[in-house]
Amino acid sequence: MNLLSCLVLIFSIVESQALANYRNIESCLGQNDNRNPVIIDTDADVDDLWAILYLIKVPTVNILAITTVGDGYSSPFFSTSNILSFLGLINCSYGIPVASGQSVPMMSSGWNIDPKILNSIDTYLTSPTCLNQSVDIFLQPSPFEAVELIIFTLKYSSKPVDILVLGPMTNIAEAIIRDRSIVPKIGTIYISG
Image (cartoon, rainbow, N blue to C red; front, side):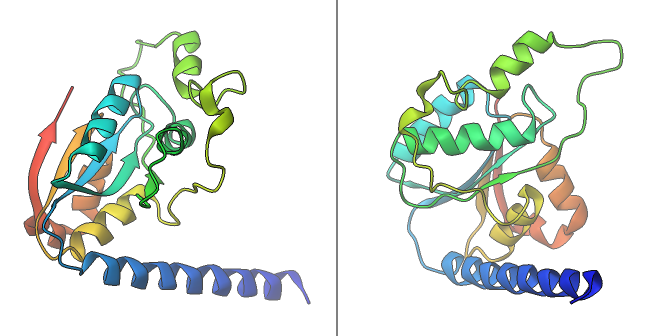
């Protein structure tokens, strides 16, 4: 089998899995639930974890997705792994999808954050010397990137979804730019900064 055939085969497998996941989201979000649906968009800083923990414990809130951004104080790779590690540490087992998002520099030119601060934020829950020794290794990120997850979640929700922004609004803004049909599905946008 030549390289092109292999790539076509791999692409078709990935595409069919994405389509299956897309259908799962559609059927899952169509269910009737009396709880208030919420999407959390976070840069995964420590204070955001408190907000996520609080909302997970509120019985009237249904967290449909957590999306992460890398244009705040952490990079997308680490912000997503920190959220997954956190969900594992608190034994959150009801399957909140977590997706990596945009990574556009937010800081104006000439202003930099000390790399020591960024490195510690990036790895505070994923460092081998930290708390992640008991994390559920089976918690995995969503197969969708953050903007896709926001679009699918809003598009197929049976009622308006509130959005809690705990960092830059990059993912939300990009989702609206990509698909304006989701705007009527947005309930209230809460911004915490």
